[in-house]
Length: 423
Image (cartoon, rainbow, N blue to C red):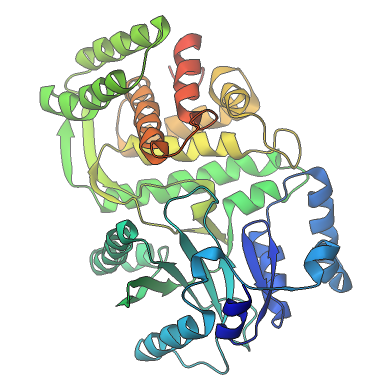
């Protein structure tokens, strides 16, 4: 850490959660509190509320041991050096037409502790600005270089093909950098706050849920209609590719319960009965959850396009938002509920959120012109695909216990025999 401090230009950073906040740019702390901070308890929710409303309490928001200022930054940046990284980004930002009024400062989001990506996200601040004007993703991991390059090219292509109204809702790519084993992408900052932030930073989150689902549905319908790849109908080929294949893979990789085998049989029988139903193939954002949806007035922007897909059924993004919203919702005020408990309250029990999701799904089906009966086919497929991705993510880590969230959710869904949100 001391070496990084010297190479980073003698900057002091305070850490809170996974964020590193520059001590010599107080506006960065204000931005963190107003746009990024997510409480993990009622006490943190209260402290965050006071810090945002009382200027002199902003620094007191940090714990006493954090206020002292520890030199350093995320381990993922230790070998790079912040001064070197700042110079590299300043060079490319000037080439993209940006003029800086002072030295570049970072508010840094480090990766999850157990993540194999070792990727950092940097919010880029000019000394004179209260909000970032750009973001950067940085990695040295070889397996992540292609992913970041694909995300950059995705943004380039979307900005070429989408109409102006949709282009304003996604980041504009500014620079792709490969140098000395380092990969960096730089893109514009979308103003606003994430739906996730809004949900977690209110004492009455239920009041906002219906509006959040409406915003997500409207953007998704607009995006999918603009990126329609083919206007097909459910036939044997589509059934094999988008229903049978993921379910067969799920059966190969997991030991199934009796309820899960029954669920799979029911899904396949239902799919056969629904042959001929309209099933458009569209582009998929790939990580359509509340943290990646940015509210700015009545508009929604969408960030983080690493998992973009050119061709998909229309339901994956639809289900991702609803499921992640329920899993992230502060069921205990400022705290998360255990995933299976949250999932049960979201889909399997008659609740206000279940009704909200039902309205969201039916409104989507009507807007896209697809049968609501398809939801019962593709929701278990969605859960199976997420369980497979989760398994792949953690297969090189031990122990694996506690890292089977999606596997537990599909087990619970099968055991309950379906969702109250469908039908």
